[in-house]
Image (cartoon, rainbow, N blue to C red):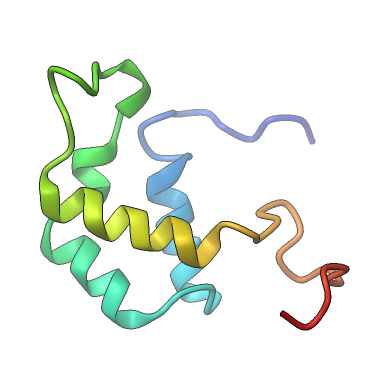
Length: 88
């Protein structure tokens, strides 16, 4: 299939936020905090932003850090695959 990204604004983190939530990869509280603070929209085009001069807002940084903690060890290309990392 190759790289399925056709639009960097929608096919990267904003898509992962939705896909991850609807597949139970993280909790409703984190999802609601992201949307209440408009974090997916704020994060769009982040690779084109200078994070020193145009950083994320504090609420978005905090909730996206939490999202990263919850999804850090997930293989996003095979979320239903066998886990070889053990029960922890």
